Length: 379
Image 1 (cartoon, rainbow, N blue to C red):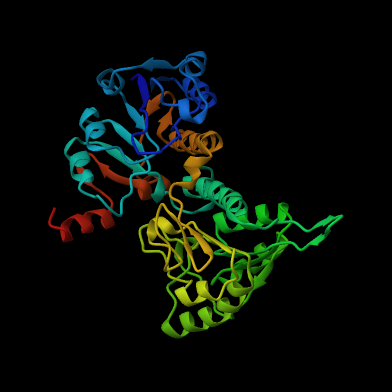
Image 2: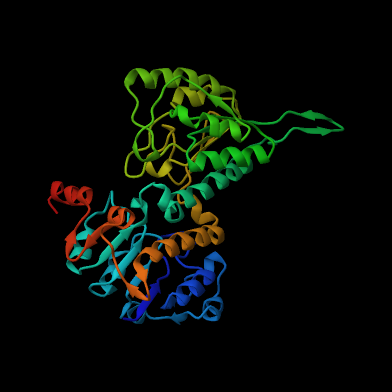
């Protein structure tokens, strides 16, 4: 059986990433796959059509030719209805599929007998680290958030000694010490800021301190499943806010990273906390897509409230498209390594990684959570 992998151009507004980069095309070709790439798919990430052709990919201009006969289709964002309509029956779709909303698309995938793998659903186990696209993209978001904050801030991050006097370093508070938060801590430290890190999971204290930041300890242990934090009780939330309020007021920059896929972002920073901050301070809220960690955050906008700038950027990894695409492509390559065996397709439903990330297969919605959402919505 020949394997054809197709890579469409992303349709999400402002998206600059591409699912495969030329170096990964070469590796997939060595695994026995032929690669088709839609013309211009890698342009915004820095890859010309000629780069893909040099890596042995075929450039395709027409959507019908791109999808027809494709064994596997790789995307960054969930495919739109037009792209789904073009998918061949019984083919494989792999990408971010957003299984928490717009779940109606999974009925169409089910009807077409598509085996749809959602990269957000890859389990956070040791064996799956090389396929963990959430982590690879979160690391980029944490890095870029600090650069955004530095650009919006009216202050230097490092201490500077000049002929006119010494400039004190900025104080940066990172809320959330997951992958994005830890990368933000490391980046802010590289820029010379004084950094504090906070997370409700006390177990990350050592990681925060290993990066040279001070851990804000509120004596709450909120470890949850899957590497995420559990929801706090009302009493714990009040204690959290009382202690954090002091640290937020003292900070020049606050970067929020506390988000759980598929759930509203926890509200951590109140309006009163913002109003207690110094004029010229900056909040960059990476949790904006889930509603924001700050109650004043407006998704996709920068606003100013009482001289405090609050940024709610969306799709931050997409603003670093070259390296974001490279890392995502490697995640996909490792995922495909579980599916392509001896130059043939083999979906092992006993493999935890494949089982957990599979949404539709063989004409069924096999993910229980998605199936329940569709049933509850009456779809």
